[in-house]
Length: 258
Length: 244
Image (tube, rainbow over all chains, first blue to last red; front, side, top):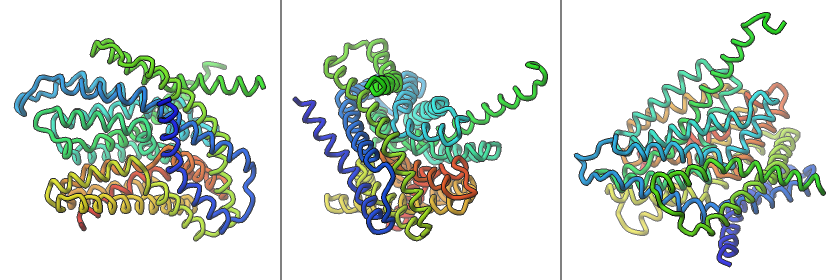
């Protein structure tokens, strides 16, 4: 019974999200475009399925995964034994970094927005980009990002230096990258931080910042999402560089198959 | 009937594969590292079934509804060839989907308490609420602007890396000028703005536009709308922090 109630609530909030989109679409359709969309019935059915599916997905996450994830984040972050600022040693939090990397990877793989973009990338590229490979590359980026972001909260080092470092690496990778992969790589950052990742990562950052002595959740708790957003750009650019290098090598070895 | 059933079974299997890492990670840390039993195992299992089914339905709806919709709109605008109409649609879509985004509301509320604690605004309910509200409007405006810039780029075929790296340069300069408390909030606001329904719609719109305009390539020009939507919020929030 409570599940049905949760579902109704979730459906309500998903619908509230969708209303502005539907209003904008209908207004422009009626006032500006004024032509029948093809396959309208199928589109409406699909839209309804998206809303239903997302609501069900969120109910499940809220009932099953988020509570455990949050308790886990709190337990792991409070177990170092340090009681004042001088006792904080970054090595004592190895388990937190490991958990951060694992959960960053896993939430990115499950992120519906990322699934959508990688499906689109596979069809738009005519299959040269593999949807699953792209998602794994993004997930590795998210893993590094969340883990390093936790390290930053523990050590209390300034956020902006990390972000600028990331920007410099992205610029260098951009110089060597192919033009076809760049837009997708830049997109992958914003895509990763969505429904599944943001709540879990935010809970982790908040738990860490309130449990590490000398850190305040209000000042040090921010920044983890920015890290999760920035690293996939690097790993996707890096992944495409590796793939194209490997491809070149294969072509450079003449005569083997002939 | 069997075809439908087979397709559905495949989607559920795929959804299960997508969620397997999360289940493994949580189970591993719970059982091996923290060495605790699962609280309410039955509830957790029911929840997992919901998550798997929900994801399968979502992906199915995506392919049959949201992607074709984005493409159909893109084609309709390309046929109409009114740049003003397209750009105003782009702005409305960016602004409208962001202003009510729950993740953004949460961040805005938290941001208001940070700024109140640092003493930049008075620490009472009304002032904090109005600060959070204007922050939301600022971020929504920034996403609207981002989608406009992104769509305009598709029309013109400008190279994305020059624009994104200029964006990084602006963010870097503003970071030195903005008050310290706002920096973390600004950086995070870039990630929270694009929701699970907006992302596929914008992606389909971008790719659809790039495919219907002659001389544009769906890979080189179609993607990138989300990228702009994750940089402009940083710039706008940093400026907002300096002005207010």
